Image (cartoon, rainbow, N blue to C red; front, side, top):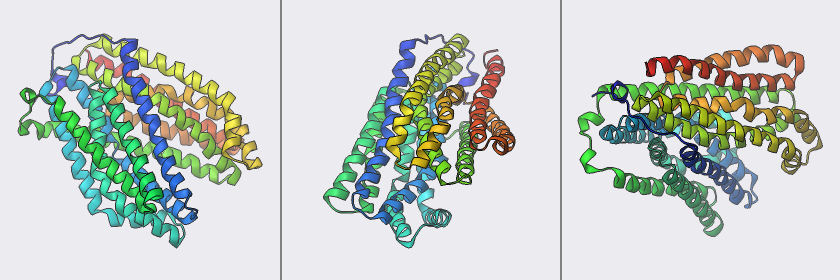
Length: 446
């Protein structure tokens, strides 16, 4: 079976501000709805007044954050491959990509369930905690682990919809998922008194119902006339390509997790006040990231479609427009953080030492969206183009530079040096990928 990249036909299409915003705005809203779920879960358990239950939910959720971060490539990898098939006008490959990714998602989900006990033992041994906290975390984990296949299927469907440029449907599914999870968690915990298990059941049922709804929506869009043969779905070269893309994205994601874990660990060595201040300020970075992720999703779809269509002007314009909107949003976010940061710090903590430290390092958090916007947008471009090996390599190179700068800057400037190294890391990711993009374009459109 020929890959969309081997199709010699050039298929022109327009890239407009309206088209970019049509993808970016719904996906931004979808991403921003996600933190509400975690806040609700913690709130309904917190109102029970038992600190060990709250700690157990936090521990259990952290384990699942790691599991789902590991397999997030099912979302991004599916987006790139789908967008390229769309650009090549290969309707059968669009469906084959969907079925291929679903099979992988279900297989991984079932494997995680089979390995659930060892994963829980390792997770709790690393996190520690009291016996009551560990017991609550186990109760939460044993229920929520059942959601894994459905959660990964939802990753695939969201990625597939973004790849097709149907982010409005993606927003609907994400909003439905989070809204249902929130409603069920409140019902099961506050209404029925199920405690920690109620939060887990709310999430599990929400993922399952959303997966079924997503499948129903997807199958309505899958025309029988373009249905691929199973031989195409299970094509060896297509599967190997998908595995290679997903492997590289997973390595990139682990490297990113390590970089932020290292930042947290170094802050912890500087005392509780600096650790707490850094945690508060990193929330500003995360909020900025949720906004910028919408334009990264637009970059994924348009870049991937341009690669599949072999149409260089669309690729170049999609990069320019997503960077334009990304930088506009990044500077607005920076201004918001600068003026809104002090009252937010005071709201999030009453500890005067933490407040003082957070104000001292606020300027660095203000600069994170500006330093990181190029990295966010380039990630979108490279995911859409499935240039995953370059993403992996430039991430590893940026990590090496980050550690080198940290080794010099932190001993000289303390926490300021640590923050400076983080900004270098964010900037290096964007600059190195932009440099590689220019090289890659010559090959892709030559």
